[in-house]
Image 1 (cartoon, rainbow, N blue to C red):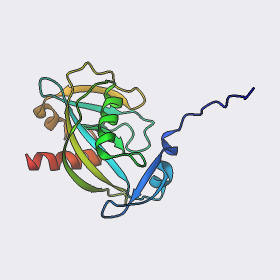
Image 2: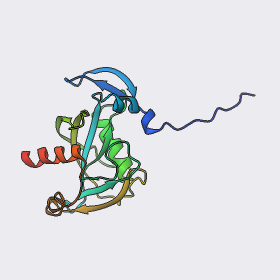
Image 3: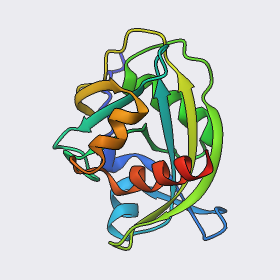
Image 4: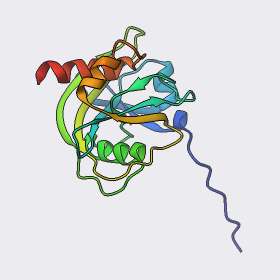
Length: 177
């Protein structure tokens, strides 16, 4: 009889990411915790989720997040796993964070290099998706959520503390509209 070895879940810090260069070419792979600690470039996706009325899913991140805990965000999304495409990561992240299955593939809008004031940076693809399904956000990721109109979101920009990468993506999105 062969003993069964229990599977230990991978923590976010242990997740394997592609490390990329300034041209978004893969140069290696490391665990997320190491990528963050060394402030290495990697890949992320941002998905603007709108409901059937055109309102935007807005949420406050949980306090246990590795990056930007407890801040507000107008995008769902996250890191692109090692060997994963941006498009596949966008669908995976949108469904995970919104707590739904069966979304259409998010539509890519634009790509940019986010460079934070703290020296961290990542290549970022921004997407949009329509979500007519009832959402059940992932409790590990989302502490609070609501669907806001564009006008409500704009009013909240000055009132709430937002994730800086999402705010940078939002400003680019609005300026290109």
